[in-house]
Amino acid sequence: MAGAGARVGLITALASRADIPIFPVLGVGGRRAAFALAALPGVRVVDHPRAAALLLVVGRPTRALLRPLLVVHDLLPPPRATVWWQVGAGGEDLVAALPSTVIATTGEVAGLRTVFGDLVSGRRPSDRPALPDIEPAPWRGIGPYGQGGSGMTGGVPFGRPLPSRSADPDGLELDELPLHVGPLFPPLPPGLELHLEVQGDVLRRASVGENPFTRWPGDPALGPLDTSDFLGALDAPVMVAHLELARARHHLRWAASAVALHGLRAEAHRLRHLAERVCVGDHPSVVALARRLGRCRSLASTMAGIGVLDGGDAPPGPVARAGGRGHDARLDDPAYEGLGFEPVVHEAGDAWDRFLQRLGEAAQALELAGRAGDRVRSPGPPVEGPRGLLDASEVPPSQKLLSLLPDLLEGQEWGDAMTTIISLDIDVEEAAAGAEVQALVEP
Amino acid sequence: MSLGAFGAVLTVVLTTGMAVVVSRWLHTALDPAQLLASERVPHLGGHEPSVHAWSRFHVRYYAMALLFLAFDMEMVFMYPWAVVFVQEGLIALVEMLMFILILLLGILYAWRERALEWA
Image (cartoon, rainbow over all chains, first blue to last red):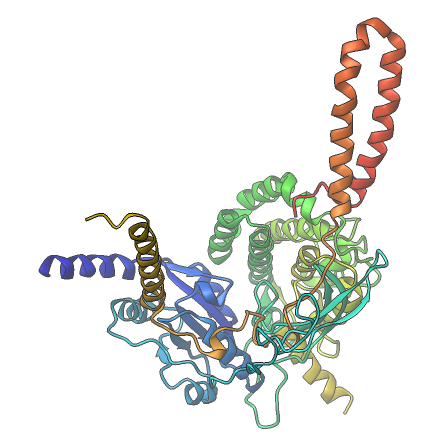
């Protein structure tokens, strides 16, 4: 018996030292901590709740995010636990809904390790399901197998209604499955909710659902966005080198998510680490990286010709420049005069050109940061953010890109649709912040 | 004492019965957490499915069938052609080239329909 106990102890000890599988849920203001999470040692960020042991809520979950969060919580296989990296005030609804939530120090792996170790060793009980045990489609017991129908294959199965039918592109009458994905559905950007009608893996129709980051009356303000460095430059002086480093970091983080979507996990890991520690001296390595990834035939074949967007239709920014429209707010910015700045431009406007565009802009940003020295940018002219033109009176680029999604996605296959969405680099939280500004301007 | 045929039947029945009992026991032993309704839904990122999963969709077999026919028919014709090639000479070569050209059109069509893509 002592031997068996020692063996179990050894297995538990080894299991608690394994990488912690985490399904992160991004709330308000948790962006920076979420970026850092992916680069933490001993942590494995998974994209499906069934593969996770810990549900990590980063930042404040809005009221609209709470119900989806509970649905996802119950999908984690037991033993499971919920950890909250609290950022700013608010979000107590989460603790009320999940009383066993552990509040841990934001950005530190030690707290996660303790909860995971306790969970694996059995010292901590698994979280109870958060939602009531009510069958969505109760067993009615009609028909020989309870299917409640008639006909050769049982006719109408019991439970949820069957999807309606419509003609597919080949003229066949086939089922059209309504599918609501998101707001917590990687690889979609956090918070993006899509209402889709699919036939097989072809998206027949798509529309964008409610923005969960939209503030309800009485909610606290939205937290700092990942473009806050650039938004800050609208009203305060900031060093050009600082802005350009932030741009390079943003594009490298985005490139990590783009290559991860196509299964290049090791490359994504390298890009994430590079993004977190990028400095002016990394210019040669980023140029080499851009050249290497630009030659990757497997990436090119999955992205080329997908999600084509003419430069004129896209909001001014990298997406428009990838489609051949060369405007860049830095051209008219006095702080960039004499730095030899020429916008990077591509022609095709597809997902592949957007990928090359951002890698090119990341390398260029590091070069500019090196040349700018201690040059300071004064507030006044519009700022060229990493997603496009930022202006206090303008709708942010993410909101414009969101409105382009339905037309772009229609008729695409699932994989191409995901490639298109990632290639646009949409921040749903930024879109919500923009909607607030718009509401103030046009009451 | 030999039980003969009856013994064999009894053995089969007992073994089968035990296999059923053991597999039922294993099922509960290995699945200590009996999942509740909210734990059994598919992952859609925070929503439950609104319609039944029983959905008929088009797997586009015709593209695969086209590829199969193109390559298979080529082989079917090539074996006898190889036997008479020396005897027939240039005319056989021209005939085969025409045949392959026709099949190539099918392959090009399948290519355009993205039948050759991995995913």
